[in-house]
Length: 264
Image 1 (cartoon, rainbow, N blue to C red):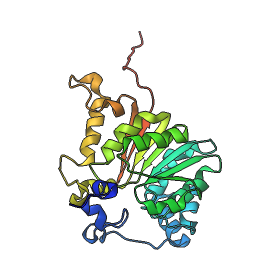
Image 2 (image 1 turned 90 degrees about the horizontal axis):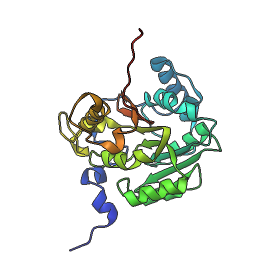
Image 3 (image 1 turned 90 degrees about the vertical axis):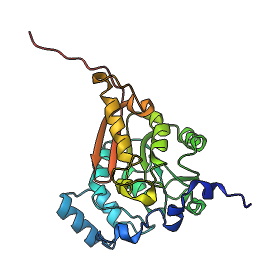
Image 4 (image 1 turned 135 degrees about the vertical axis):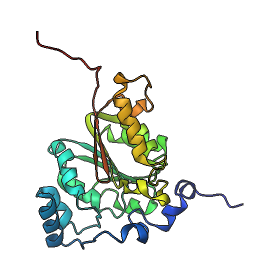
């Protein structure tokens, strides 16, 4: 019997058939696709989201390497990441793909930022030392993830744009969230896959990632019920959680037992 490689064992068949950004036609065909010409992209995002920023400029004008993003992500990136600009931020992106997003982040965060990308595809090694450091490995390999964080000297922002598979996203989150610095951000994107069977999800399915998010919400409110913590590695220091279309943002900070007062 042929021994499977690490990649063959970690990547589900559904992900072998479709690249990380090339979803099944029946799932994606109903959505409008705009070629990434600066005029098209900027006009669409400005008009729909009343958003104009340097990040939009970097996204729409990036030609060196391919970057593929849903348009409504750009204002959300800027909302949650803008406070880290001008600092020596340590930024980890899970999923390198064609290398364009690393270039976008380099332009956005500046030369002082420590930017790393990880991907299971060895072809992505070609982007190492261009806009950031690239390391090859799986997002559910805990030893690998820990080694990358140690090499970075810690991490302030994690952006999970990796496999988008329901069996991977929670495991990566549970391992990496404790490593995020206080005041940091953990963002998971492309969560529309939570509703797609080919990514291990489905509407109402118990493995749908938004079910895991509901557990985090319950954990954050454990002061008010007696069911305990289901995911303490995440919820113990999750000070805020935001849900947007296909994106979940978790804020990392110390949390305290609620205290209330009343004026006499």
